[in-house]
Length: 153
Image 1: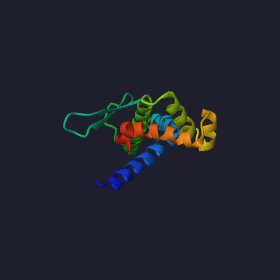
Image 2: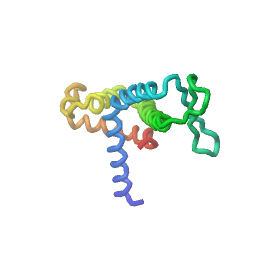
Image 3: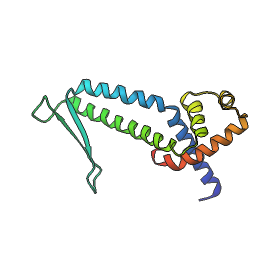
Image 4: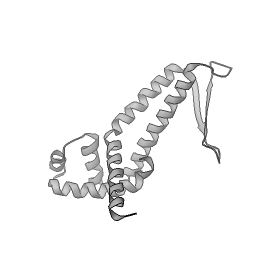
């Protein structure tokens, strides 16, 4: 792979990570709202995901209010919602773990720039740095996050 294509690939990964960081708070709200929808569709339902070695995994749904197999249109919808919740949780949990590798300064940058969606200028002022130095902090943070979050991009 050429040096230029490696650099371009890294830029694409960083853009994807930044998009996930900007949506972090929305993912958390999405998890809660999807869970409410799931609770409404399938009251007293228990869903679990089993991953057996050599398989892609299987969703199992049971309901304490029904003794027979759930055979309704909602069961497919419930599975889709459950899958979306799992995807959002994976993203949120992965970001939470990745942020532990950052310095306090880098975490503050991520929070201000991506979660609060502040401008570079406002972030620089809040952290007490020049805009140029903010890009150095961003680069250090993104170098770490590229390693930690490559799997969710």
